[in-house]
Length: 437
Image 1: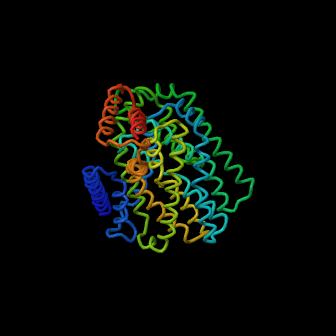
Image 2: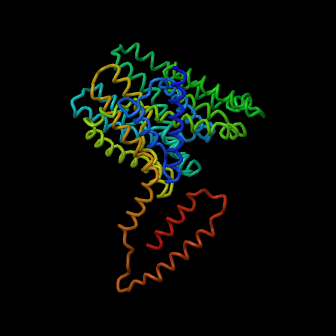
Image 3: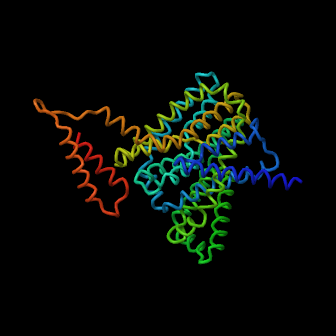
């Protein structure tokens, strides 16, 4: 009977996810918010609480995060990772300053104390790699010029968690400096070792994994990824970081074939991850902390957009790409919930858990919207707010100006070769817009 109930529950969840995904596709909208709302409906205090399938959904959600980060790592080589980290570390410092400080200040203003301030700083600092990876794939932006900048910031955040999580664990547990230092040293050593192996021996790993049989390739890659993720987590390093580095280590034909094989599996378990997030959110706990969570979400959404814009500008990306980079970084998710969960377990502040849940729920729903609409909205506001200058004594001729701008745009379009990335058009179009204004 228990098995039958499990099959019914999980089948109903999967069917609902499929229908919601189809609806989102027709509306040209990311399905993530709909998956989260489905989780709220099936979770604690929801309309149809689950029982038999909850444990399986929890395991599936972990696999979903691992696959999301693996597929993200497959997009870039180890040399790309090292180059981006070397060039983008100032963006990581700006990201930490802009987005951790609001959380810390909010906790102190509410009188929660310094330890809770450090915890809430982590909640507001770290963007959701899983959500952002899904959104970039849904919007077809993995090949855009601003995407490496976004990924660099995400990787820096994920690697920073290898340092932050041991520190916050030690603070919450009240351990001494010696024990905390040992935990931190183990975490840093493990992360450095995995990164070194990925960079130095990536070709050998790809050769070992390579197979002409899709079944064998799928099993080896999936098994290796989950194994490394588990070992990383056992050593106090994020499983997501381990999965990402496995993807970095694979290159060439192996990476391409793996991407093709794992894409449907990733989509399935990623949807389960978002449902699981909603399952563990009691809707009744959200209203009391909704106002402070909403204010904090507005502030940190703006700081994330500013972070992405600054980092993309520093990398020489066009104006449109800068706004896209900023909008893509807004979503928070899995790491924020992990951090808040540690605080809830320790019992340092009873309101911290509901506040973090409401905050993440707001931004994980708003994140896909900002990723899609920040750039066109900013472009429209910028164009409407900047009237074209008119020479003294001259009578403007709108019709002639419009024809001139159209001609210039056509010339630019003809000059763009098929090999250029989408932002090449954006940069030249931006130049035409400036000329026409």
